[in-house]
Each structure stands twice: as structure tokens, then as C-alpha cells.
Length: 275
Image (cartoon, rainbow, N blue to C red):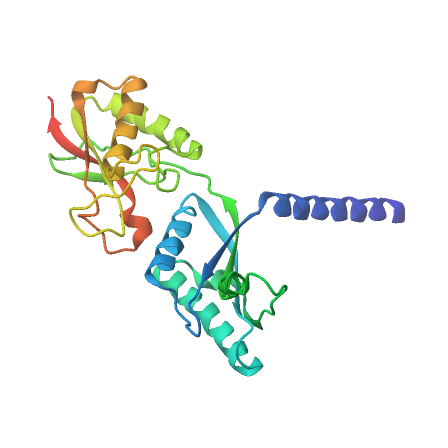
């Protein structure tokens, strides 16, 4: 009896360790550094743009943990630099909140004060690199899904449907491989709902109305259109009648007011109904 209980306890311990190891291996990290001007606690416009681009790479993941560590260069007193490095870390947290990232996931927020020079040459370069915040994102891949009822029979001409989880590589018109199973389901639904003619609308964020951004695949300033066309091409390649489809880039003209992540989207718009 005692040996049986010991065996059960041993098996339970092994199972718990297995779950822990699986969790650790499933979780990955993305690390980015953002740089500050001398004696300044906030990012300049260029670094804020880099920050937004980094966050756009997280659309296809679930964030598990966030660490934010601030630093200063070697100039100034210890107390001053300790406070400034914390203020820089807090600024990054504020930007995360503005981008609607759940900051309850922040496990570490600290300032490590000043970083001393490690060599007498390249002093300016060292100081630029030392005035920074390191942002560490722990994440797991999302299990991307699509609602099977995205095209109900009650739709009218002009109605729009946001395609959740149709995602692209950062600043490119290349679909993420994680989105392909989602697009397969969308393709099957569109083929089934033969009564609808559909336009694929591509949207971007963070740009003034009337201006598109560069597609890093082609170098052309047409990312919203190129992403819409990527979906259009996929649908046609997989059996949807091209006469039912059109595509258009909407640039950043139609923000939803729900944050940048929601503004980067692809929509289906009903353009005709065939009886």
C-alpha cells in the first residue's frame, strides 16, 4: 500500500515537471531596445515609430510577461541617473498602455541607473547605446481561429466584416503562415456563400489620411492595397470565382478608434447580392 502511494506520488511529480518543461519550452521571447536623448525621459518621434513597429510584430502572439529595464549613460550623479532610468522605464509602460497592451503582464519594471564606459574610444556611440530601455516580451503563439458564421445570409450591400487573425509580416504584404488555416476556412465559406460579391479592403495604421506606407517587399508606397491583393490572390488561387471579387487599399483613412492593432486590418465588404 505504501509503495503504491509512493509510486503515485512519483508519477504526479513527473507529470508536474513535464507540464512545467512544456510551458517553458512553449514560451518564447522578443527583445527590443529603445534609445533616448541625453537627460530626456521620453522617446523622440523616430524611436516611437520603431516602438510601434515592434508592437505590430506581436499581433499573432499572446503576451505572457513583460520586463522593462531602463538605463542611463555615465554622466551625472548616481541619484539623478537612478531616477531617470526608472522614469524612462515608466515611459515605455505608458506607451504600452497607449497601444492597449495589458500592462498587468509587466513582471519587472526597474531602472538600473548609469552604465559606465567600457573603453576610452567610441565614447559617443557607447553613450547613445547606454541611454536606453530594454523591453522583453515573453509570449506564446496564438491559436488563430475564424468565426464560421462571418457571412450570414442576412448581409446587405455595403456591410463590412473584419477578418480577425488574417495577419502579415511586419511592414510587408506577406501573410503569416499562422494565418493560412484561417484563410482556408474563409475561402471555403466564400465559396459556399455564392450569392455574395465581395471586395477585400486593406487598412493600415499610424499614417495621415490619404497616405499609404511602404511595402518592404516591393518598396512601393501601397501596403494597404498590397495586403488586400494578397488575400484576393489567395482566394482566387484556391477556387473562388474572380468575377465575384475585387480589392482596394484604404490606406489609414478609416481608423476604428480602438488602437493601432485594430486599425491594421483586412475587411470583406459586400458589393453585390446575386439571387
